[in-house]
Length: 463
Image 1 (cartoon, rainbow, N blue to C red):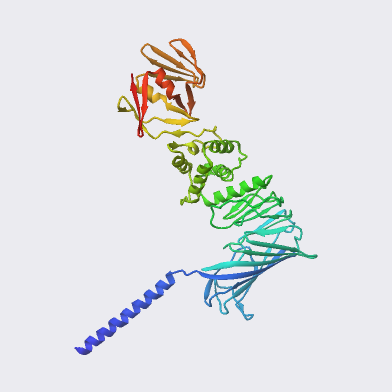
Image 2: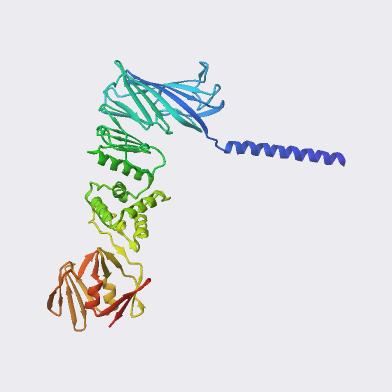
């Protein structure tokens, strides 16, 4: 009996140990630990191909899975001490804390205007390269410039070759060459900017980027426009101010996700941030309207709201909510101007208070302020006052009740009452967003009502 109990305990111990070991192995395999490393890349462009030696350093000695781009040719590897390694398997064993690869990439036989090199470095799965130090010797295309998504770019021109040193921090290094020389523009500490136009007189701008990571912008007319993560190739602008706006637009579009039809609103935001009108006619009207309505302090408050906005997607409605919080009331400025091809709609503050007629709720209708005027969406009110209304091709509005017959002509400074015309200083009726609007003083006079207001309600009473 005693022996039986001892054997049972031993069996339970062995079973538990086995289960624990299996769980340990499973959990260790399930957790993907990222390994940090650094690499040095030596490049030589000669006789129609780029010869590359890629050395990945500071690695632990273990097995790694390879990710090899399709464009690479003649690939060889060395695990240290001149030990040639086999690439028959997709995995490779590191034994001396580093591994090196040599390979070639074919370049066009005819010298192109520009050349983009992407997806060209061998990667080890689970390894995060902290820095890429690239030394490039250019024999074939000595005239021109190599740049990329690198924080440091140095060029030294020699008799037989052009020598480049580039240092990058990005996971995927993209290099770009063009025949036409590129100039480094010292615009901001957080941007690497290259342009076909020299802007030596342009100083740095005082701007806090929305993006928390560095940006890379190449302004050139030698390559099609592309956007690759934080590297953009775009056409150049005419002057320094345009260049500043172009970068701020890039920063905004990189930081926020817009609907496709609303991307152009980034141009309006960039103009407000820099205090410079944009080129686009509708964006310029929107900028002018904001500049007229907002004080310097209110613009700064809005900038701060944008800086602290935590959502990735930024919609026109979100921008209107920010304006509403600053100005008060309801703002639909960006919402009404979403479509770039539609006519400009001015900034209007909608009154958020309820309206009551003779103590009863009228229902949904708009009351708002524009250019120091107090306006009402008059059709729901006229209906509540038992007037019959008829709109005729937006040229005339007929309003009838018993023996009272009005004819209003939108945006005209006159109206008809029972067949007799009266001239007034301003148009009593205007069209806005397919709505008939009337100033409150005209409503008070023409329809024989009293209008009072308190903090929460607009009270309308028939006399």
